[in-house]
Length: 188
Image 1: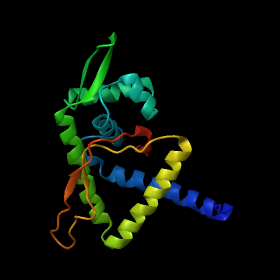
Image 2: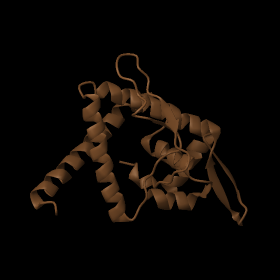
Image 3: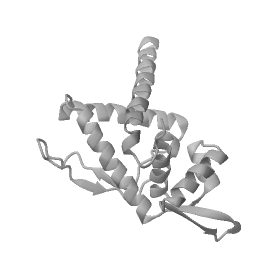
Image 4: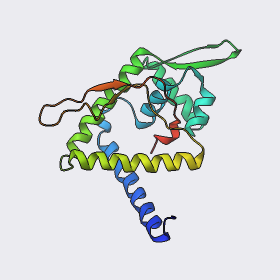
């Protein structure tokens, strides 16, 4: 069964509104962030793939060469990435995330999770799970229509089945090890 024009139009409006609000939420947390959303997305991508050439990272992200160069230079100065000669082409360099970069991704994900928990105070666990399921389904449909794969980091992920509820409860973390993703799927 196909989606009606009216329902599709309403969904488009909701997605644009969600995107606008998410930008606002992320902007409010800028003072608490060491990394910008773009830098965090680049590090998340690098945490999920083997060492890559900057031009390939740029192609995945949709970022221009000059923006990519500036972002990678900044991440390198922070010690979050390192470059090494490409063994297949001595003129090129491969970029990879460092252990410090992986820790930065973990720290930012933890901080973002805590901020989200505070904002979702009125949402029940069931409502949050249903929302996540709906967003996941929509993301999968879009990825399939674009011929892309999901971008999932190999950083610790919350296991919703092991999470406890109630004040002071901490989610159990699991590690996803073999994953692939595209950067453009995470940049708002």
